[in-house]
Image 1: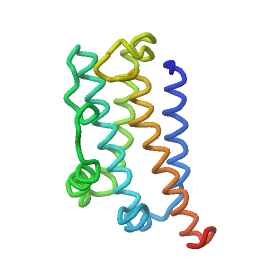
Image 2 (image 1 turned 180 degrees about the vertical axis):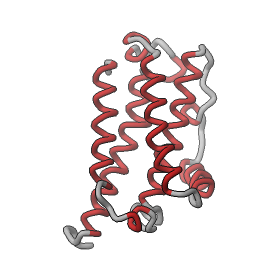
Image 3 (image 1 turned 120 degrees about the horizontal axis):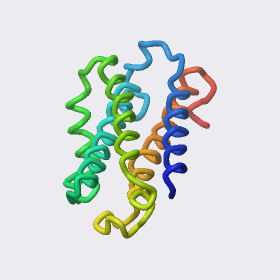
Image 4 (image 1 turned 45 degrees about the vertical axis):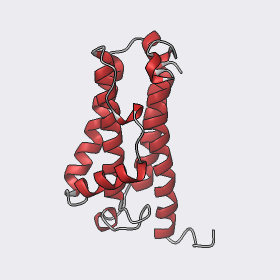
Amino acid sequence: MDKQTLFQALQRSRERLLRAIEGLEPALLTQPGAVGEWSVKDVLAHLAMWEAETVTLLYQVRQGIKPTTLHLKAFDTDRQNAVWYEKSKDRPWERVWADFQGVRVQTLRRLEAFNEQELSSPTRFPWLGKSLADLVYEWVVQHEEEHAADLEIWRRRQTGQLTTTN
């Protein structure tokens, strides 16, 4: 994947997620049940935590350090998500929103530091097992799209456009 395609994918996934929550009443943003037991706020905090982990990976790679992030470790995803949920569940909406927006700025800034070859070559950082662009696409774009789809379904249920049998 080339740099321009990755940046476009990051923009598209973010726009999709924002459309899914656009115009929602503030009370709905913190109401449990948007995705499993999580509220919209919890989903955004979750996405921000995983994207922050990716920002750390990008920083470490740029410094020539083999990443110490979860991307290259064996871990229990559900357990990690539960740990991060407990850490962020009581944070105010405004703080979660600021983190969610801010981490994307950091992601784009970190990605800008890499040239095309560094981002798109699957052999440039062999310990990743894929290109840096593919890793970011998988861990950030696809993850955000997955939760955007969840929120779209939840939103349709909130507005009566989807029944539980659909």
